[in-house]
Length: 113
Image (cartoon, rainbow, N blue to C red):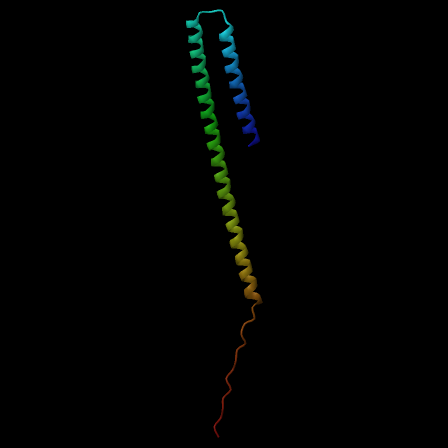
């Protein structure tokens, strides 16, 4: 998870730097106002597209991680349930062996006489 946070931080830093650099380049370039506005618009559109693509890629990656966690959790839960059932069976078997059985009683016959 730390790698993903690092990636997001790196992408944010890159996009921020690109925007600042593009803005400064456009402001200090010797060109007409119309040309500068066009370049600013194009750069903004490109940055917007890059950000959208990055977001979509991150969303797909996050969905994959969620699916992996869900699958792993389901497998682990099934294993725990199986172990619990095995333990129950062992405990019941041990309890049945340890529980004394009631002794058989015989009725004594009484004779009349």
